Image (cartoon, helix red, strand yellow):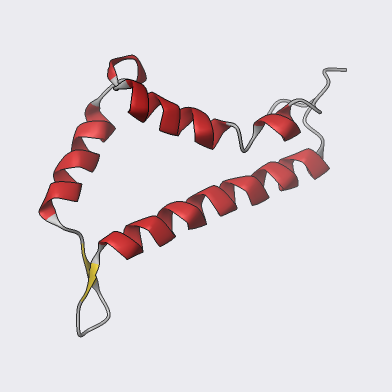
Length: 86
């Protein structure tokens, strides 16, 4: 970790990351089918889409896909703007 990131900012960024992850998990769970044993099944069309996205460089994503990534980054920007190099 860069030495100029205060522990307080690191913790705040970790909290933002957890919220981002939790948001994604809620989305995924909402798209999946809950099985009787409590497990989840992701529909094949979503698996195909997400696998394609995993293998696609950012520069080759569609504008809507890049916009979605930018929206996620905006969660971090207010905190990143507070970091000052010594």
